[in-house]
Length: 443
Ligand code: ZN
View 1: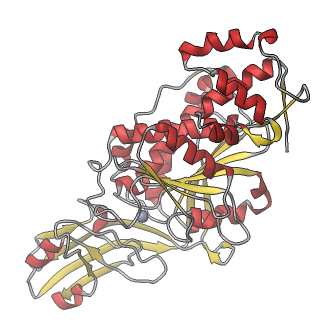
View 2 (view 1 turned 180 degrees about the vertical axis):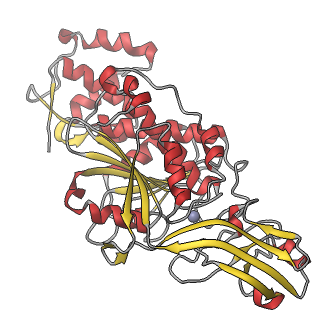
């Protein structure tokens, strides 16, 4: 593991801890950066994350073929305005980076209101909100503004300027890997291509960064954890194409998106069903938070790339608000007020529990043959009594483990059947392991 400077003393080899990340402050700092599919806004975002985790920032050249796609040209923008003929600035990219359609080609000149109108996007039903629009794969330009503002713009002509550049360059993404005891990995993936949108992209980015920091300071566990910070769709396709020969190492995966609002959780299942689906549902059910599980569909975020034909990785998606269904979605209303520190904290803790569960889940079989073992002789009743106050395993948990550990059922399967939280079944299994009543079965 490459750890530079600030992270070195806190790395897991030294058993140190990192102070928790202030997710809300990071979110606010990242909010104004002009992210897009490519360009300096993404780089600045990843550089900011590098202050908190030793992220590798990777560049993939324009034109690189990735499966059925090519890495697009890089887009950068310095500024954009719409002015009245007498020089009053009416719309300014500097005040909100949603004002310009992502990937707009440069433009400079006078346009009649009618000509300009063909390039204006507004939301008549939400007249004070600025919509978020992109035109990645069709060369175009445009402005997004509150419908109420456009209604007041009744001059015959306007001066329009977009100071942007669409040129050969590269696609930028961030990757950070915490090694495990085995070659198998847990994948955590978030998108980084939305500009000033807080819940849609920034919430996932800051929670993933906080998770990386948390697990960086933990002792080594069974699975490595890989964090990906990618532009949506093309970023995930690029990473998959670059890593095609090692995708079988991904044992479990999660896409994180829209996890900063205070609504109920939604977990979208993997394409073919996987342990992570069962684990996510288990952790959500025992968390006390309202939640719903959703079946897989080939739409949404990068879970659809990870679940695409020939790839079909066990990657689910955790969200709170569901894309496309909440009024703030893809508008200037998805701002820093829509995200709360409490919701970010809940999402973080839920994911720590989920990842811990995936790390600690295992399958055992009884060592001592048939029948129920005599627990008193092995001091297990005493051990259970000692755990009672600390929320440890109960006698029932112990009996479930000893009854169900036949080499085919995992501890998670047993916890589900016993309707007990995984952590208690895990503790019961540890007691049985210490008493040499069970032994691990590795697939
Ligand atoms: Zn989005």
